[in-house]
Every structure is written in C-alpha cells, then in structure tokens.
Length: 361
Ligand code: DP6
Image (cartoon, rainbow, N blue to C red; front, side, top):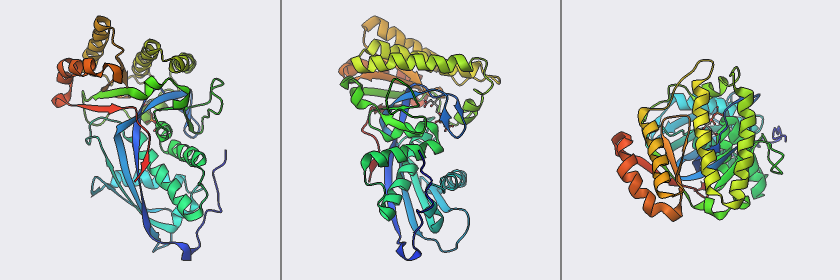
C-alpha cells in the first residue's frame, strides 16, 4: 500500500478558496489496541464499536498560500478560540502526511474544530478528531484531483491517514463495527487501515448502546501514547499480544452468532486487562477511580440478578462504558439512573450508541 504521491500538486492558478466539514465519531474498542511498533502499527488486531453522539466536527478552510514556505501554514480554533497546543499537533500531523498530500503545502489552512462531548469530560477525543481531519484531507484531494471517487478507496485512504494521526482513529471511519490489524481470520484485514465489520456481524450489534459514565473528568495522568510506549519493555507484552488474538477469535464467533454472553465476557476481560497492563508496566500507573470499581461491581451484580445482557468496557481512563442492546433499554436505563449516575461527577453520563459513522456536512 503506497499512498505517497508527489504528483498531487496544484497549478497555482487552479487554487480557489473553500471549506470542507466532516463530523466524525469516537469509538469504543472491545478487543483493545495497546502496544504499537514502527509508524503507528498495532501489535495486535483490535475491534471496536463506532459511536454516534460522541463526535468531533471539523471544518478545514483553505485558500491559496500567500507566503510560500517549506512547512504547512495552519491556524487552529478549538471551540471558537485559537488553541496553540492543538495547532502545533495538527501542524506536525499535516507535515507528516505531506508526502501523501503534497498540495497541503500550497495552501493557507484554517481548522475549526469542536467536540460534541463536554470539554475535559475525560472522553478520548483523538479518534474522532484525527479521523475528522483525515476525512477533510481526503475530500480536499478528491475536490482538487478527482482521485477518490470510489467510496471504498476513499474510506480506506481516510482510515490509513487517520491511523497516522492516532491508531484508534482509523476504526472510526466505518459504521457500527470496525477491525484494525492483520489477522488470518478476516480476509482483507490490515495493520495499515481498518476495515468495516458490520456486514459480518449479527444485526443485534447495530442496536448496541454505550452509556458513558463520567466518573472523573479532566486530563489523564498518563497519555495513551505514553501507555503504548510502556508496552515496549512490558514483562507481559508477548503474552498480551497473543491473548488479544485469542480474544479476537472468540469475539468474531460471538459477532457472527449474536452470542451476547461471550461478547460481554470478552469486553469486560479486555477492559480489565488493559488496566492490568498499566498497573504492571515498567513504570506502573493506575487510572481507575474508586467509583469505577463500584460501578463495575454494580453492573455485574445487576446482570447476575436480572440476567439482562449488560456489560462494561473502559478506555484508558476511569470512565465506565455500559454496553447493552436496545431490547433491554427499559430495564437498564432505570438501573443506570438509580445506581450508576450517582457515582458520576455531577451525576452526568453520556448516552451514546452504535452509529452510522462519519458524515460530510
Ligand atoms: C485504550 O489510539 O489513543 O483506547 O495511536 O498513540 O494515538 P495513539 O493511541 P490511541 O490508543 C487507544 C487505546 C485504547 C484502546 C483502543 O482504542 O483500542
């Protein structure tokens, strides 16, 4: 797969000004990506549910560049205000993808971006933010050169480019379910980009809810990138990467058949293992909060009492994701309101669900 293309350069007279807007969602991994090598390649395949209401909305404004230069000319506004730290990160990202989109150097760019979820809610925004940017770049290429008219080719390139910004972002391109990482079990799977999985799964997974308990908001103590780094000298790294493949094998079976019990068992085991890996890293750390543990126990007790298929997952943070199919919403929501919402900061949880993927606005 080679996306570098020195031919994607504009005749200066062709350049008009314009803007492109994409809305792109976050996702929650069931089998986790934790550990990477080389340039954003995963140590094991991961599989996620694409969310709907947790998204980033990004507008890329472009105009002919006034002062030529080597790097990329970009300004970034986050939720209405210039944001130097994000601007630097995006400039670095655009410079990294210049061999793929050399025309970016010929433009003055302005990025306006905002998240649907509250600022510092503790929701990882890199998946939605980087996928939205990648989609804007692919649309820009297609507007200028008509090179990505085929939808499948467009999505694959967007996923590849999103991966270079943040690994988990490559999975956000597809509706409902996405798989990233090469496995002999799924033809067409790749370490370079994610592929859609919804068509290979039982329709019940398209009805899944993910209510996100905001147990502690604010910046994480250790970033995901640093966490991935700690997998390099991790005493359990090899065992983890093998175990993830086993989990994926079981998950693929549960996806095909609609076996929610197996699905839920894997989701919870993977969430706990992710945090166990942090706690057993060469420089150990703990991201769970006391209320995270209480919430996990309550989910498991509710399931044992009622038999309803309600499970949890976690990202690299303390906020619990409560997963269940639409068929039990009338039983589960009152339980969340009564027993889990009081564990949340200001009683707040976000209602999300499996969604249709990014949308150009
Ligand atoms: C725990 O994709 O945020 O959410 O590639 O360094 O940007 P970078 O990491 P990132 O890692 C996400 C890790 C995770 C699990 C997952 O989404 O699979």
